[in-house]
Amino acid sequence: MKILAVIPARYASTRFPGKPLALLGGKPIIDYAYGVAAHTPGIEAAVVATDDERIFNHMRESFGESSVMMTSDRHRSGTDRCGEVVEAIGRQGRSFDVVINLQGDEPFVSAAQLQLLAACFDNPQTAIATLKTRIRTTEELMSPNNVKVVCTVAGNALYFSRQAIPFRRDAEVGKWLGEGDYFKHVGIYAFRPEVLAKVCAMPQSSLETSEKLEQLRWLEAGYTIAVRETAAANIGIDTPEDLEAAERELKMNEKK
Image 1 (cartoon, rainbow, N blue to C red):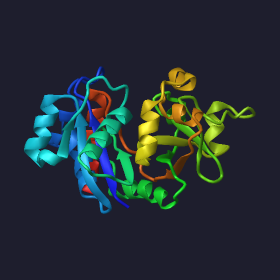
Image 2: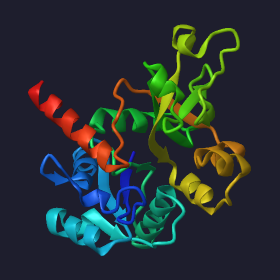
Image 3: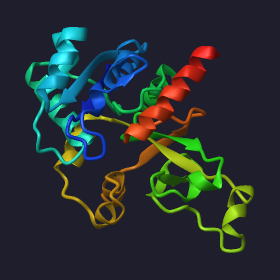
Image 4: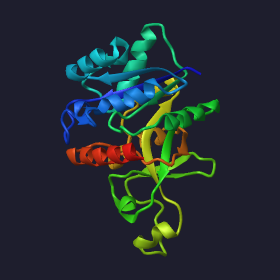
């Protein structure tokens, strides 16, 4: 199985301009995700997809020409940026069986997580796959910044929401975690290339527009999303404050 990892990276983030090149532990944030993807056994190629010359030049100078591709600045999401990369690679006569969309602002992603995701495609029926991790605090559960997911007994997504789901009718909010399991979505995706092309061509759906979650478009269209559990809760960097938290986490990991 040939696997391509694509790491979308925008410079013009509203909450944190220049985020991919901000330093974490003395090196740019984007270097972490790329480094993991490029050295994960089973991943044949990794490429950063950007619309900014500063990111493009950094990647080319640090990791070589094959590490980065310039893409359009008009994409709605990182998924669409991945789609452009796969199209461009296809025109070069190269093809892959699975495409992983890896978030460039999650520096603590692991090779084990990428391999767990890739293993979903051992099942020929898998079209899209993603990860989840267990929620352990009420604050985390109730935050709309943490996307929650509920799944079927077979491990496929039923729904994603910024709300805490499922709702516990007969328990106070502070006791919900004691009543059952809750899971946070870890925003790493993998696709069959033909499925990626189709979801990129779809117009936004009503549920997607409501919750601002693109994966709801795919569910509404009838796609099955396989979900696997990872013990690690990756730290996403959306703000300078998140970067400070990531610095603390990095120092703690270095001491272990």
